[in-house]
Image (cartoon, rainbow, N blue to C red; front, side, top):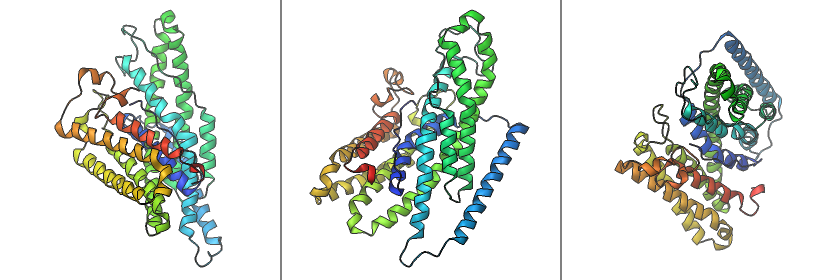
Length: 384
């Protein structure tokens, strides 16, 4: 699915929470389409992973030493919030500066390539009816590597997250030059001059780079999701009992449940049918996520009715919630009724225009992205 997820650039605990929420559509897409397949690890791969794991363990030990030597917090302070702020900073950097610039575009590039290459094992044959090439990856791998280094300098006891981040940066460094070289080859029409000789030669390394990226992306996505869910749960617990923070609690709660709805709306990848297939969705999980989101949306609307002054600037965000809720209900109805996509609708599935199809995961993703943009536009959002 080619829908784009908007990243947020927040630096506080709350800011990073929404930053990763904006990524969820992209994470889900990556896991949905890029998770399948695995490349065998050679000796160099295993040695590199062992070195990364060793460095990750070293960082954990350093964090524990720093915590042991840190002064005892003063009475009334909240060390858990401080730890969460550090973790939020790490997640924010990994999402904005490393994962978001690559994951969606890499998915689009692979989908385009796979759409015309008939045999994924042997590569192009020269007998293809259409040669679409593949999309170049414009983001800089060095920026991702720098972001990972900065994130790992933040002292948090998250060895598996750190390992996944380093693996993602390494996969990006391999993928980008392979994709961009192939993209230029097809864009310039060089395949016409050499009868696809170089295209066939590039194919194994290109597929290998994509497969390695799929594994790295899925691993990092899982770690980011797990860490973010913990942050969200702890922040909601801190806010829930504070009546003065009721508006902020509603904002956070609706954003968290919106992310859960997007996750439930992502079908698993089917090699023979890469487009979204509603029959592959878990109706019970989707209905549950949609119901919990709708309950939170209605509760937020009721709070706004009794808090006009505070709620007036939230009108656009509230409309975004309504639109996302509608998209969720449309998808639930399609899956429940087992209503297949029409021939015309199928033409838009899996592409940038999937948002136009009522009852599609792409429309849910698009409405979610609009919701996040509405949040970013809130007065003072940069400092929340």
